[in-house]
Image (cartoon, rainbow, N blue to C red; front, top):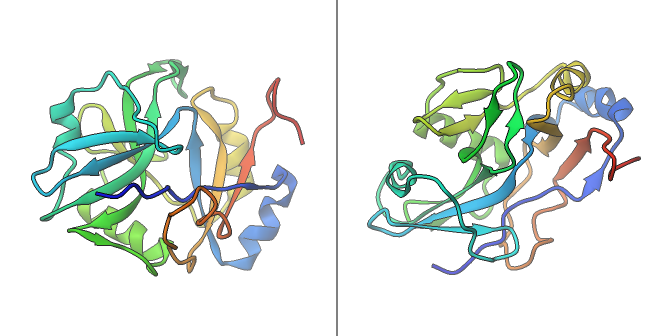
Length: 205
């Protein structure tokens, strides 16, 4: 299967702007986890290959059989998510490492989902991997695989809450009606997403 660059946010906003975007009613938000952006490619037999957002093969220490178990439907499939490989603490003080968290799907049953909205793709993910909350924002699929939640309100308070913990970097806002473009370059799907990251030693507004 031809490589497809994943949707990503380039435009940045400060946390103080979050209520403005919430009032628009056009965005949902997803917590941004502190890991490595990773796509999983499934062929029509469910065999997997993993790539980072630069089209480099990404090595991982996860059970390949567990990743293969994420395959749904018939035919080729591509999931976008975060490979947690930085050993960060969560809300309970536990370290998270070598886990995979899904936040989008761009190919399903051999069809590139061009023109589909993020809202449509999120509903598809919800159908394929039903709600099974284990934390405020995570739904568990298997021992080490999860689906991130989508948030429609309280952007600012949720940002302030999750920013206390190392496992989170902030929020990514995504237009509900934002259409998936052909990911031939890294910048094809940046116009409908906005990121709001917490300040760190190497990141300031």
